[in-house]
Length: 212
Image 1 (cartoon, helix red, strand yellow):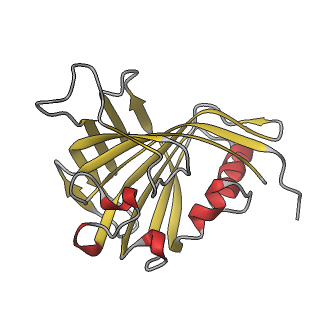
Image 2 (cartoon, one colour; image 1 turned 180 degrees about the horizontal axis):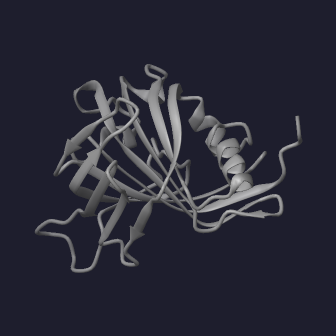
């Protein structure tokens, strides 16, 4: 087996899930109704795996679970879409990182997956507004996920509803979660079809290194 090189991925992550707003999972609690289903999207703004650049690539996962994932009560079922723009070496690198084989935070996250139903390479569109007002991901014919920043009558203009150091952050410790609500969500594939609106969504930046 080849040694894992030093690597780094930094970028944007968000999800849209079936939980009420705000998703209890982000606070390391059981999901709404003890069941969570949703879509997760990662966009690599800057990435390197050894000497291999991974900038600009996107991954999307569909998943569901029952129970408190953070308390060891559950293992997630998941299927993953990878950016078709990735060449063969980039695909291998992304699979090593997100499969948990290259260490770092993703290795711990991968340990919570009980069943991986497959991986497909598809065109993916990913957008996050610079002011975090909106975020979206789309895979033609398979996934549409659009969300807008959460706001209310006492939200200052231009400000975002955020949580510092959430105890159940999917991208690891020490980040800031910006809360939103889904405008549109529809997923197909891996037996994880789902639709919904006005559900919980959150954006969190990530910055990972490995293999240590």
